[in-house]
Image (cartoon, rainbow, N blue to C red; front, top):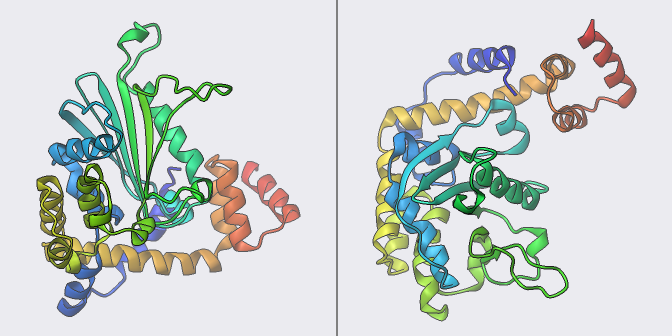
Length: 313
């Protein structure tokens, strides 16, 4: 949801915050990871590190002996709106394409209800991207989506392995339907605690190395590489890329101010509940977003009806 008023308030609050100290910046840097929205988007912005994206997808494909994809030639990082970040905990996602293949990669650190549905929708959106109606459908690209999750999916509770591949299938027979063309992968990082790399089949090792970087904070990356005996060059390059992203003090300072601004903004939301709901209503926000805001603010259905009338006045 685009909303200039909300962004203005957020920026005013953020700009009034005192700058962090050098010690605070150093401490904050060590706590960052690739699962952080700004680290993710900055690492892969400007079409950077497409070889890491290609290698990560191929590491996942390797598990099921699926054909490796050709190099991803261009990528685009998606930015999240302030209300999406506040209400749904989104972090950056990425889309890209190569020769006859389209991909999407998402990282979700915090638990989100209904994320399994969102994951399938992401695949559907990627299937439509850059493919025009009326074109030759036999030329539609292969579509692969990866979801790195900092939580476990309820829908995969019986699944012990940390990586799950979801494909279409014919119901009665269970026979896969276009599984070689469309795949969604959910990678549940907390489930890695149930395994050791040495106990996994060799085809899992490249993905394991990459996941170790995804779940590691910056201050632990070098230790993790040594402890896990990470040798996969793509994982090593990802670790270096993350550390390079967070090296500038200006980046960490901006992240600190951003997060502290969020905390202050949430306090403002609590004190200005109805004003923010009015902003959302006047901006024709999605019904689900308005309901979430009302629930968080304790606004009743009858009061919401009154606010709707005010928004239309």
